[in-house]
Image (tube, rainbow, N blue to C red; front, top):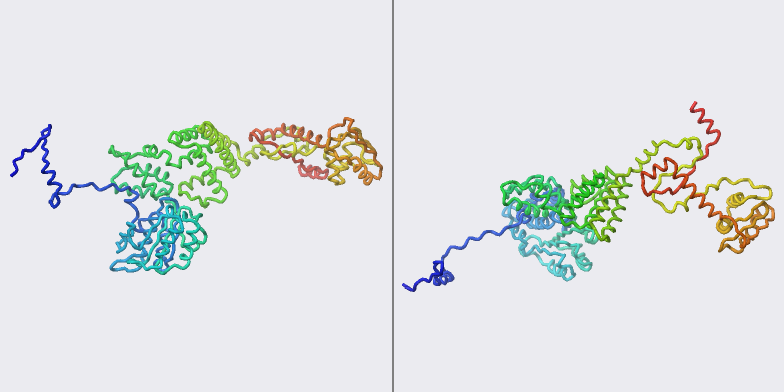
Length: 596
């Protein structure tokens, strides 16, 4: 026996080096140290293990089940949908179904409740005959050729060789081309399953060779029930309203919802009470994109205080004003689509979000939505370039509120019809009417002159005044001559058979000769036309027309009904004035008889 004393440290504890050496020696039957099992996140722990666990995809499961039962199994599948709806999980389940084998069943089967010989290895992605490839990291044609080189060989142990390619839209054009021939004439023992979030980036030639399944976003109620079941299994207490907030933030993605639930459960780790909805809201912050829809709803309802408070809350949570404005544009676009084509518009949103967007569409006209789109589009530029982005975003929201407070064109027309006209208007049936105002180009160029009235009958020698001469030219339809006279002639004196004028700079040199020749042809009288640049003439016909147009617009804008329309639509302009049809004496007599 070794009598060597045992050394002690200053605290009185023994330091037996021989015992330490003995503990390191192999062959000793010592108890193993118990290690806690590593934590597994909920998204992995509760990944569906069979098709019955796959929530929200009943249409796809029903189609696949019927196909397997009928023996009509496709050689290639295309699974598409947003992130987290189960594309990769579904691909592995299909691979298990294709290679399902038990002591009782040796055929493809969708009933995966019993574990088959290949199920565990396929679920762990370790089966030799089921190859998984992430096209996001292996995009080249060489990567595809590695797969295609092995396609012609039979499977090692399973029924089929299954190739699962995730994010297939990331493949290069050359890689897609290399894949086409095999997809068109695949070996009997090979099956392909593709998954993508960007179906529009997949060539049509590839899509046409696959059986396509669109995995839907999960409805909020269905996803909330799912989270509630998981909370029960985890012995965690979270209020249902809080779970509903998580599902809204997840936007139909099961994986996102489970990741957020992981965070939510931790919120109540130090208490015995359930995690509340306010706690969940604080936790979510910007993750809840539905808050941007809340902001839009406040704005279109003219709730200025609530809208600005929501914007400030989003900003305080770390939101970028430009991103918030961009999300508002997305929602206005979605609302416009629903307004145009109805609630069945393909928005790619969860059912509850579609319901909110549909309610927005019902409360707004298409003209109002178009106005909101233009305001937000300009606001996005302002936010991006402004020195204070939050201030620019607030001004954009205020413009939205102001725009939504304006009456719709239908309501404005009703208000105008109820507005009493001035007595003078009722006594003058020939008074011009103004069309509904809207933003437009310069109204002066669009206005018509008050003096363009019916052509007067000229005297025997031809027109005797400047107005008669212009009306006479208009009636003869010589457009080039008429336009030259309107633009380049400043009249000095006009009488039957003669005319003197001051030519405007740039006037054609032969204008006097052309005018005299045409008047001789039309009237049979020789006209003396004199152009003298030293004389001072009056305004040209074009200048007179513009002046008359300005005066007429000023008079029209003072009409009570028009003034009310301009008040209802700030910034609107009159672009066109339409005169009512003249009322004949017979019409007046008939109206009087009807009144009698």
